[in-house]
Length: 198
Image (cartoon, rainbow, N blue to C red; front, side, top):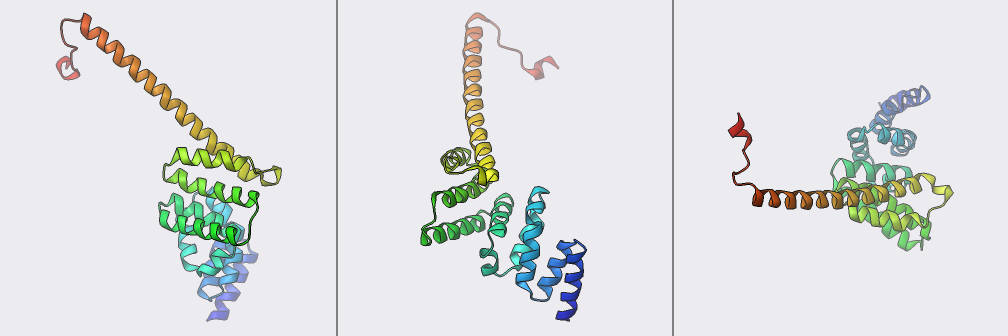
């Protein structure tokens, strides 16, 4: 039965139906083959927001196989984060951080890790922290890391815009409150409520 699954998986992989091939590789116990196939489609599945499928496939992979692939780690952090499985996303990030510390990773690798973390922070609605980490990470990223640099710029811009709009909303609310207070002093009758007008 195992060899049959492998033959079927190989055929689906050749026919560019990797999602089906992955399931057959997993059924055959071929973790590495499933992971290699998943690496080829993980980014597309993230772009298509098919995160539930990604999470279900990651759950079937052995942990050491998942942790051995940067592409799968990137996709897993995003998928777990946006599927609100924050503990799993943070566990993967912590693993990456520990591995980076053990290998004396450079500033670029640390910046790449911070960009991965930004996805989870965005999902957790921790926008200010996301923006600060993105701002700091961007300084270390070059043209070779164009995707990560774009994500960092986007995260920082989103944070900046959110801060600005919050200030603007606060200013508008304060101006409205001052205006309402002046009207209350001038007006003798209370403002009619919508239910009174009906």
